Length: 281
Image (cartoon, rainbow, N blue to C red):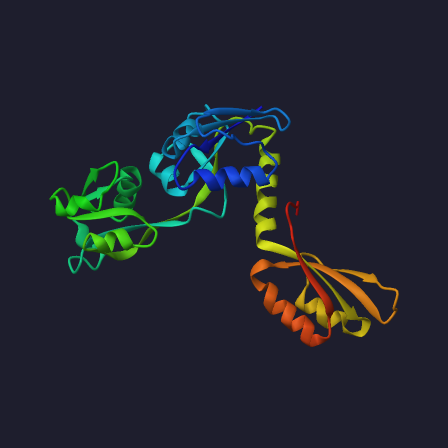
């Protein structure tokens, strides 16, 4: 039975459980549940603090886990990133009082407050910046005003909180983060890992693509296929009227309406779009 860690709360929790559910795994109905077994899929889920997940996976206690890339790198454990999951995007950046800093090099000799001290220390060491790191559990935006730090390094989503605290972002992003699936290193991977990854990839594809069906005159098939090439090639089926054929193809969800318009202008009719709930590519 493969042992999987899932965030028990926070911004990653709901999206992680939703993705696992779409992948065909049972998920808890009560947020107070800390462990749940899915016997049909031979999986045991452990609902843990997102920050602790990398520690358990790195220690080999659990086989895989879902957490943020920032939390994983900050933990500095012996584990590896297996795949990105397409949600929970954020950026780890420097910020300071408006007008005080314009470049990361100016941080030499300064005090930096952060909740990600492992990640920040590694970043500074790689660039030869000698700064003092102040570890805080949260609300690092207040550290400068309270005299604890000169600047901060924190996860930024909209920047609204920083602006309200009289701060601004400077320098290049330290890290672009999102939810990732991580796995332990050493030893043979669990036999159920390939199935889990294949299912999660199927969810990602299903979210990014739709299925498009349309009818087109036979002499226009090549032009239509150029608009809807599919992953390998579209399916073309004969209709009762030999002058027409039916075409089915996967297309990117984001391009749906543009492709429908172009197909219609080409002469396609009965253009239908349907969602893909699951797939294996």
